[in-house]
Image (cartoon, rainbow, N blue to C red):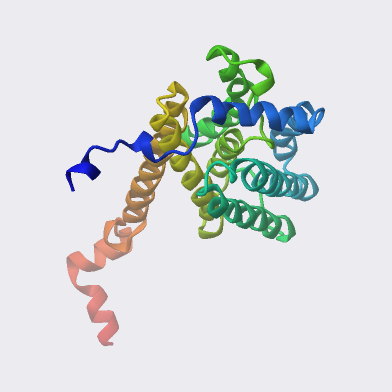
Length: 256
């Protein structure tokens, strides 16, 4: 038992930070010129959704389905799984997320924007902008080459962050809540890996998850109090009801 207590989380990783970051350089080089094309397609997503038409909503859902399927197969299964056995179990979840977007693409009331710009929607747009424009810059800011930039549709972290932004923009119902599950699971796994590698980038998925959870709790709290305001006990009685309750004639009329 004392020998087990001497282990640290880093001792269970089978790869070094250099090997991990090198994966993105190899992936971008192997797929070139797909990374800049994927970035342009990602920039088209909010444009498609802002048009608020069934055809453009369907195109956005199909684009997200393709991104999740590609990242799950090309990056997780083909490149990440050989150095991290856990990636082989996470890759099928990316396929499930792709199927969820395909299901939304064929639904009449599938992927679409919610009405208004509340804090949840504003955060959704901020996450989309960060995933597309700022997250690729974490590589040069951390002293790594730009060739290793993490791009939406190629790397899992920006794809998951953008998807959470899309999910925050959806009308609240049970079907669209499923959009949060797999991206959140991936970001939790990514945060654990990066923090174990002692990489400062580990705070990015950590803060993203904390922010989304906070907004989720806030949404539940608002829905709870909105429901209480609409409950019959909290509705003010009508004038006729007050008059009959005061003089007893309402009961008399019923007895007649």
